[in-house]
Length: 153
Image 1 (cartoon, one colour):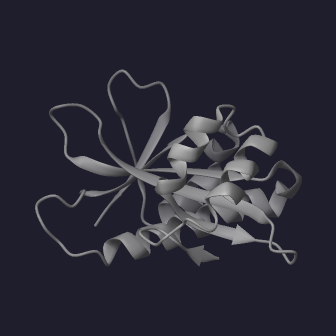
Image 2 (cartoon, rainbow, N blue to C red):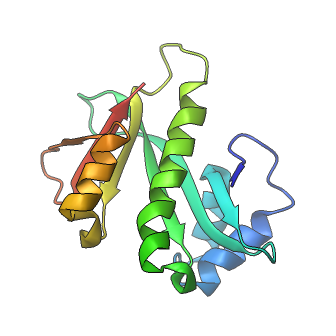
């Protein structure tokens, strides 16, 4: 796994864009290119091909809440084996949280890391237990139809 957030990604941006486009993660090349600056971690296979990518961005949920790092991840479809898809996003998010928690504390720093669950498989009791076990709490966000999880710094 490679932590690349905040580093010069000029040599890998094209690879990231191709990864997302070829795997139908993002359909618009301009949007894929924009998101390369948000990439936090990536996992490569033995051939140095991208297997999984996590990205983060700061976004307030509304005008009354604190800022959070919002977290996204994408795993290459051919690598979504049962054990892999269940563990890889958790490994990526723990690494992302650990790295972000080391950033200097100031008033602009987000309060924590948040992610939304799009995949209903992550609502299974065993996975909910794993998510809670790595320090995340489920929260209710008004007007949002997805399950949200947060871990504060």
